[in-house]
Length: 162
Length: 86
Image (cartoon, rainbow over the protein chains, first blue to last red):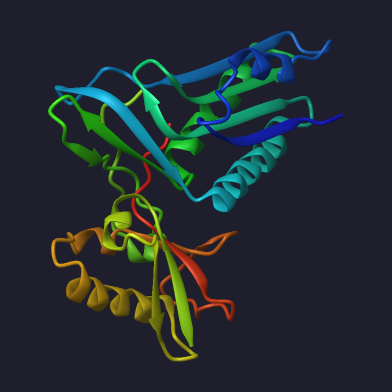
């Protein structure tokens, strides 16, 4: 039985599907399912956002998802099903950027696994967002450096996100 | 050897083709490649904020490379600015 699902969805061809995520992590032995759905919101840092373009390095994104899944299985055991999918391309306000879901026998593990998964996506996966604003300007969001600790004194946190 | 560097995020503005090719020595480390890319960008992308490169990582399709690492022989790499997914 497949326990993990990792995907990058080109929004021109396919939308993210939270219902599919919940179905994937369901299991007769699991009493808990948690999910996180990230959407494009209309305002950031006081500016009105009209759209976000997501760019990503797909082979390494999927490798990061797999590495996270392996570490989650080591931490929580085999009684875990995990779903991680992220959008690539241009999204309008309200559209879905990321869907994460975890299924486990009990709620503690489900909450923890889901939280850890979305933090891994946001902080370690090579994904970038370019915000487009009402005034016609656009900016790449600041984020977390992937440099190794020896070459990077500190890590900049991303700001004001979901 | 020739190193092909794929551009992502804010680096995309540096070259419309989406990648930059640099000539480096065979025993080149990531640190040396970083310096070579900084020189290239200062010459060909003058508006680029050079500080971003210092906070950006080099990677191949499977891993982030540390500055002390020697470049892999295939030398098809990506430059990854700070990430902001989700």
